[in-house]
Every structure is written in structure tokens, then in C-alpha cells.
Length: 113
Length: 114
Image (cartoon, rainbow over all chains, first blue to last red; front, side, top):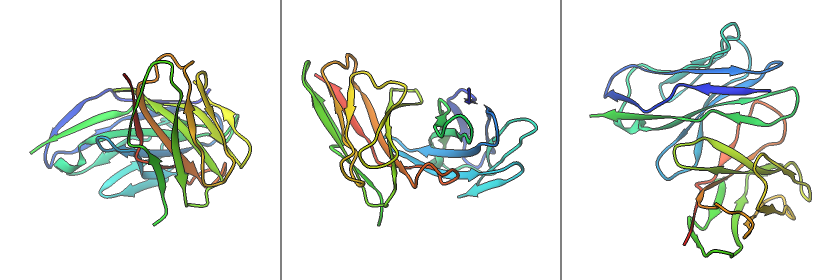
């Protein structure tokens, strides 16, 4: 079945450092891929998405490229801020075998001033 | 602004008591979902509904029940049969089962057994 694997956290960075959070997936067909962000005590917010191979999703300085050859959708940001401290979830929406969205376990990011 | 409203934000339940968590959306979305999140863990699907008067069990439906009498509303009841209900509950909606749009989430209800 479909699955999503994220790098374990927490990830701790200093302000203005480069961020990468790895996400790989297993799926049949051609899934859509998403990154969500969850701030403390809140629900998840859609951060960015990509719907086909080689698409790049971007928002608020974050980027992720849909790599079918490596089945990956790594999240990157060139210069993180303290306000980026949150939990980041990679997710997959399959188009075969049912609609269900599969979420990764989440990666907690701490950014120090 | 359109969105999803979950209430209450915090809820305390006594042993053996049923409680109902509210979820209302004004996005005109067809599909709605309930997820459970435990500390430091990902999301697990409890129930989902594609259209009014229809809903399906997710991965961890035991001890929970839902109804979908109106498009805007998808309440979740945590019954006394749920042995470990303390968790953060998230309601979400999407345009439908069409792909590519992603989910809109509410701000969650934190349920604690006392």
C-alpha cells in the first residue's frame, strides 16, 4: 500500500540556516504530494503541493520538488526564521486503490535565535 | 472568511461518559474527515464522509461514532467504549474526492479523561 517516510526529528537550526526535511514515498500510480505545517496547539495548514513529476511547489520561502525517479519530496528553505519553528508533515494523496491521504509521522523543527 | 470551526478547544471527559466534538465548515466542501493525533505522532484517520448521510470507517474507528446530516457539519462522538480517548482531535475537509486540492483543517479539540 501507499506510505510516507519522513526524517526523524527534532531538527534544531540557528536562524538563517538552510533547512532540508527529507520525505520519501511509496505509491502506485501517480500520487499528489503535499507538505503541511502545524504550529503549537493548532491544526495543520497546507504549506505547498505538487501534483505531477518534476513539479515544484513553493510558498513562504519553502520549496519541494516532486522527484518520481527517487520517490522523494524533500522540503527546503534557504534561510529559516524563529517563526518557522513547527512540526512539518509530508502527505500523499493516491489516485489508485482509494482516495485516502497518507500522512508522514511529522518532523519537529526548532529554530534558535 | 471560510474555514472550519471546531469546538470546544478543550474538553474533559469522565470515565464512562460519552462526549461529542463539533466540526462545522462553511467552505461548501463535500468531504469531511476526523483524525486523532497523539503526542509526537502523526495523524490517524477515525472516520470520513464523502457526502451527506454517508460516512466510512477509517483506521481507528472503534469507540467512535459520527453523523453527517448536513453538508456543513460532521460531529464526532467519543463513546465510553474508547478506552484511551485522551488525544488531540482534528477535523478536516476537502472539496471532494478529487485529487490535488489538499485538506483544510480546523484548530483542533484537545480531549482529556479525568
